[in-house]
Length: 195
Image 1: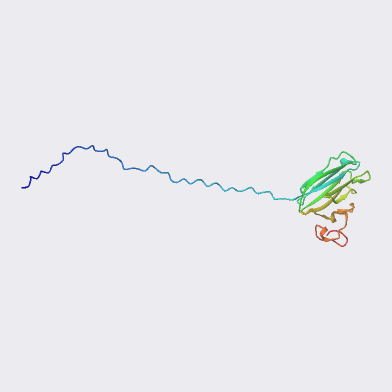
Image 2 (image 1 turned 135 degrees about the horizontal axis):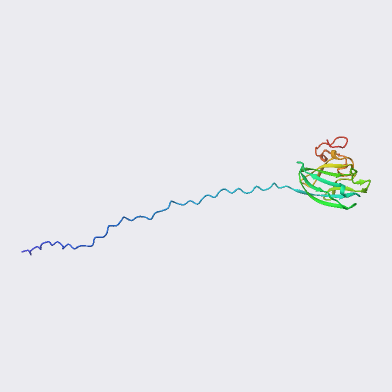
C-alpha cells in the first residue's frame, strides 16, 4: 500500500513588508547643449598706404635781410608739406632735411617780402634743393617770389618741370630740357622748355 499522501499545505501567509510606492527613475534634467557664442568677426585695421619717402635737402643761404625770406613745399593736392621762415642770421646757411612722398608732384616756392630776391643787391643769398649729392633746383635772383615744380620718383630720381623756371638757376631746374623724360609732361619743346 501506498503511504498516505500528505495534504498539501499552504504556507502560512506571512506578512512581508510592503515597500512604499516608488516613482519611476527620473533622469536629472539636462540643459540643451550650449553652443559657445560666435565671436564677432574681427576686421584687421586697414594699414595706411605705404608711401616711400625721399629726403630732400633744402639749403637756404640768407642775404643781408634774412627775415624777409620764407619758403614752402606743397604736394600735388596743394597741401603744404614743408616750410621755412623766421631767419635771423644774415649770410648764414640753414639746412632743412625734408621727407617728401615719392611719385608725387611738389612745388617749391620761395618769397622775399621786400621784393628783391635773396641775391645779389644786398648779400649773396641763394637756395638749393638736393636729392643725395645731386642739386636739382638752385637760384637766388628773383623778385618777390620764385617757384619750381618737380616730381620725385620712387627710384630716387627727380624730374623737374623746366617750364616753371625763370632762368635764374644755373643748373638743374634752370637748364633747358633736351629729352622728353626730363619733363613732367613728357614733352620737351625745340626751345628747350617743357610743354
